[in-house]
Image (cartoon, rainbow, N blue to C red; front, side):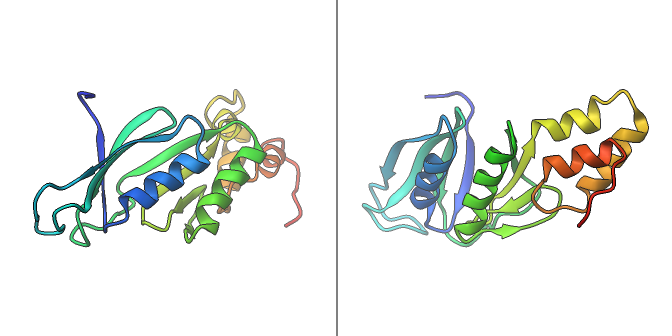
Length: 164
């Protein structure tokens, strides 16, 4: 057993969520499903209580704890994407599966877990740019977006006017 795992609390949908994550994110899989041997405050004996899974190689455990503790934006998962195609694929998979768009590359899945779908190129344009004015323009452009449009951020960084 791994010494440190992140536990995500679900309202009796941990297995569904883990299977979804495993289907859309590379290097992801469900590694175990545990059923409670006895009744608990939120489960009957024999029901799924925890699901172990990996997302992009990181280990998690989903707990079917019920509605007591809902997800918040205080914790999110950042997925660094290689290009616009990967950005679009992941964003659309989450949002189109009952999720919700937010700002600046953030979205929530249908279980309320917050995700940051962040192109590596965005980070380069903002944080690794030798031109402070270009970094500012890139960040200003990103601040107007929901899903990140890499070409539009590159154009803004270059000082080009982008038609909306």
